[in-house]
Image 1 (cartoon, rainbow, N blue to C red):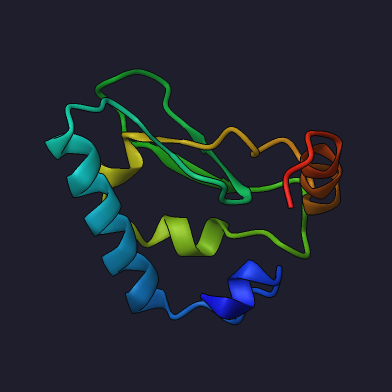
Image 2: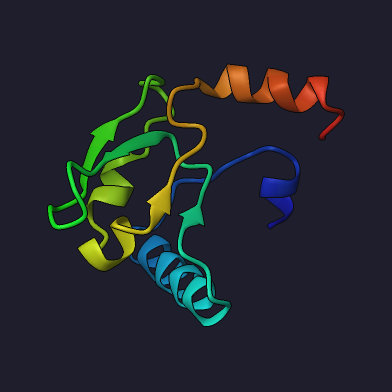
Length: 102
């Protein structure tokens, strides 16, 4: 957590990521939410509510996290919203700076 607070992001453990996402998804459902917005650098597509959710790589090849998301079950992927999906990390950092977010 200390490294994340400093803006450093160590390599992700696949299993730890899945556990965190399951926890967040469960909490979202518990609170009555319909969608779980995350800051992952990836894209998700749904052709219709009955079809599978497809994960695609982001516009930021260096920080792409589509592989992490692609391992999640459809029950979680169907509820994920990725508001940063069309941005690169440098753009997100610039937006944060403009809004005074450290």
